[in-house]
Length: 288
Image (cartoon, rainbow, N blue to C red; front, side, top):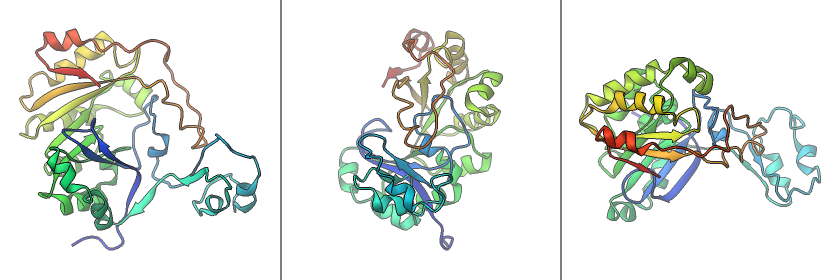
C-alpha cells in the first residue's frame, strides 16, 4: 500500500539523455544529498528544502520580487509570490513535488521511444537514496515496465541501498576520494559506508558502472585512481568505468541559489583521466 500523501521532490527531469545508462533515457534528479562535494555543480540538489532560484541575467532590478516577499528575501519560504510578479520570468522554484504515481506517469510518457532505443529511466540526484521512501514507491510502480538505472554516491543506510539496488537493472556507482581524511575534507562525509555498499554491490549479479569525476589534483591523482582500481578490479559484475572531466562551469548555478562557489582546488589545471592505469588493470574505461 502506498503511503498517503507521499511526495517525491524533484529538481530536474532530463529527457532524451544519452549519458546516464544505455540507450536513450529519461533521467530524474531527486533533491537532497548528504554529501557536500566541494565541486558540486548542482547546489539546488543538495538540501531538501524548496526555494526559488533567480537568474541574474536580464534582471531589471525593479524590486517587484522584494516588495511581495514576506521575508524580504532573507529566508525563502517558497510561497511563489516573486515568481508571479517577475516581469521577465527569471524566477522559478528549485524543485517540484510529485506523488509517486504522478511522477511515474510523466516518466513513462516516452516509454515506447525509450524502449525502442534500448533505453529507460535513470534516478539521479542529489542522492536519490536520500528520498528512500518516495524512491521505493516510485520504483515499485515502474518495475518490469522499463529498464531502470540508479546513479548513486553509495552513501545510504545499508538496508536502503540493498533494497533499491536489487530492483535495478543497472547501477551507476560514483567513486571519488578513497583517503578517509580527504573524503571528509572535500565531500564532508566518512566514506566507509560508501565502500561497504560497494562491497555489497560487488557480491550481487547486478551490472554496475563506476563513475569518477576527474577533479584536478584531488580525485584524478595517480594514488587515488590506483586506490579506486584496487577496490573494483575483482568484481565480475563491473561493466566499465566512466570518467567525467571537471566541468569548469560547475559554479554557474550558485549565484542563482544565493550561494557562493568556493573550490579548494585549482580549476585551471586540466583533468587527467589516467586511462593507462585502467588498461593495465584490464578494466574498460572511457572519458565522457
